[in-house]
Image 1 (tube, rainbow, N blue to C red):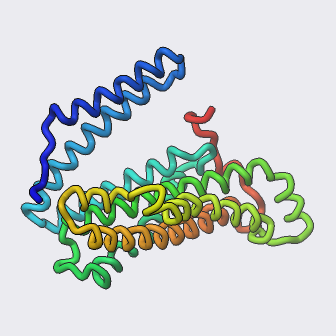
Image 2 (image 1 turned 60 degrees about the horizontal axis):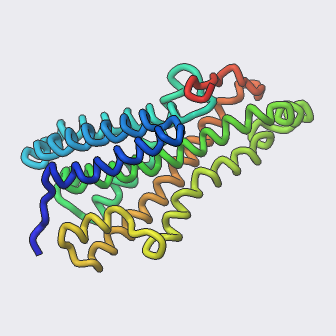
Image 3 (image 1 turned 90 degrees about the vertical axis):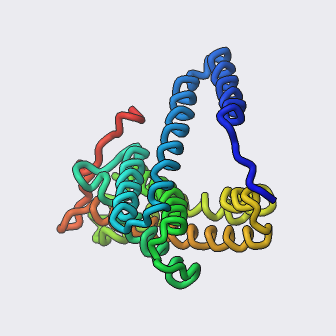
Length: 269
């Protein structure tokens, strides 16, 4: 079966549906129509530019250009993690914790998959590296953002209890242990739900794309299984790293709670 290409007219039909939703939002006074249209416009521009960039990368397979794109993706993901926090860390820690955690998790899992599972040569082949890294970054970003937001917000709310436990002689790790566990659970819930409903409630995006491109359904299912398992591992590793680093940074060397290291985000004020 030949691949069916989409024309600008085909895409405009989908755009009209989003425009209709914005009109409904305006009539119902939901107040989200501007953000909806802006988000739709951004997605069109960003994906269109990405398509042009990937076309160039696929043709050249230049490792330096590929590395630059991977670094750009990591930095943007780190910024998004910081921007989604209700109470985020001040200074470079605000963006650094999420970026470092995603580097530890997403890049290591991607490299492992390319070398041991997919076994593509060379390992930086952009047709495999960029989509795989993008899926891992996108999903670990969400898990890390949820976990960090849960940790900092609940630490702020329960600061009196934490300081009381410190006064009674507990270590910083013990005083914040329950909050840390709850944060990790919150960060892992989205990927757990995605795996639990895959193939029953939802048909995941990668599998859908491969089927639409003409791949045999069973092969598409194999790739999707691999991706979900890798995302689960990457999200877990990233959330654990982010929560541990964040919780440690909430206390000083004398094990005192230092909430002045957090600032209220303007997005949520």
